[in-house]
Length: 124
Image 1 (cartoon, rainbow, N blue to C red):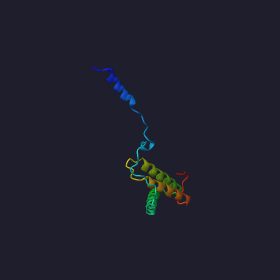
Image 2 (cartoon, one colour):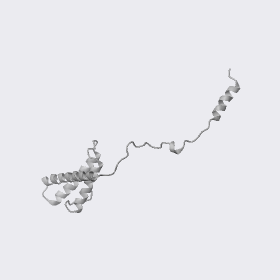
Image 3 (cartoon, rainbow, N blue to C red):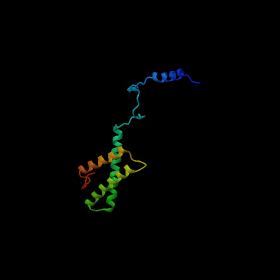
Image 4 (cartoon, rainbow, N blue to C red):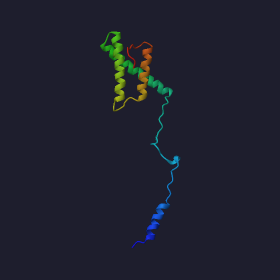
């Protein structure tokens, strides 16, 4: 048989609990990164990226020269081919090409257009 005093003691203990806020330093608000991302590119990496971009673009130029003789058609083909290559590289589930390599291709392509080596009617 329960006594009223026992019930009051139990209720009294619950009422005596204090609610306290956790200090903000101890609260985890988002998932922490295990490895910080490095956006720095070393000189050796930059040279490798530049070489990769040149090889890729030159392969597209050679491909277009095989099937076209008119310079305007070659330029149009190269522009479309490079755009398609970049788009397919981004959409590829395997992601064999890194975002740095894609950026290097775009940058090299823009430089080649400015220098007049490739003539495109539209921009990338």
